[in-house]
Length: 440
Ligand code: GUN
Ligand code: ZN
Image (cartoon, rainbow, N blue to C red; front, side, top):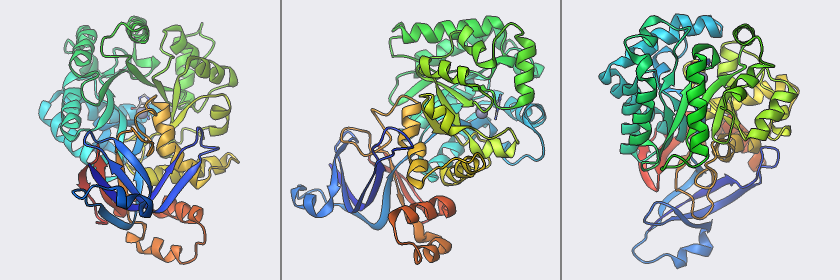
């Protein structure tokens, strides 16, 4: 058993509109030997119940928050973050595809996976849904490192067999896509805290044949035909207007872009679609009825000039929405910066995103979008003890700003708007400290 003392903050609501924040200014978090949350509450009410051998680690006056959940990112794009000047389709051709070609190398895969996961944890992100490259090696390396760190992670090998450079769809990869996917599922899906996500990049880069088998495999897993549980699925949808026009020309008989994924049975619980900017109400109703989720990736959308996501419309339609950094189109691995971009996108749409609502999207909301909210996302008893310790005033400007704040909500917003990884003192995974940060 272990216990940590500090200022606890988490959300207990069901939507970003009603996040139900809970604070314990002098709180205690007790973790059992399996790394699950045993209890939490006011320290002065709980300390005398701790057994003698359990000395609370005192993080006061730092804050203890649930680990962030990043519902959409590409570890194989780490090295092209901040590549200037293109919009989606040119950016893919000019920067992304060449960068992903390098992951044919197990050494590149391993070194990048290690760097990426360590960087994620150093930003307080403890769970993510991650795209690999087309190469099986990229996912082997990522899963291997995540297992070593004890992280809860979803990932998949990108599937792509048309409209991409020869190097990514040739060298006998294509015939082996199905085989490689099955092999990764057998080895990694349901192992420790890892899960496999079928990852067709987006409709334009998969043939009908590939789209068909992916949908069939996904549906078979939802029907209970995969012994280690339902698979996840991740892809991109309606990010950019040129992309939407391209899909319309590739699928002239389809009612909409979203309908293409419906036709190939790729909408369902555990399916997470990145962006979803250019959707109509019918598409949203369809996604909601199938239980598919959306990854809102605001920094990426602003960087590529893709458009402004309609958070209110998505949530009103009944779709679960989480936040994604979408590296390398996204400009940061920081969920603070991602929350700030989300706030700004909402502002430009005339919509309100409260500080508590933003933290909801970055924690419990992300867990809901991935269908993992029974396991992670807040401090509910029995959930996995993934959390971050934050010292907001490690940044002098935040310390200065805090002299003028009068409510917790104002403090939270200042942290969201001005914070970054310099505020991180520690990251815990299943109750174990895996990172000691700048602010320690
Ligand atoms: N659409 C298809 N592939 C990608 C990708 O790698 N990044 C983004 N942002 N959009 C995509
Ligand atoms: Zn993406």
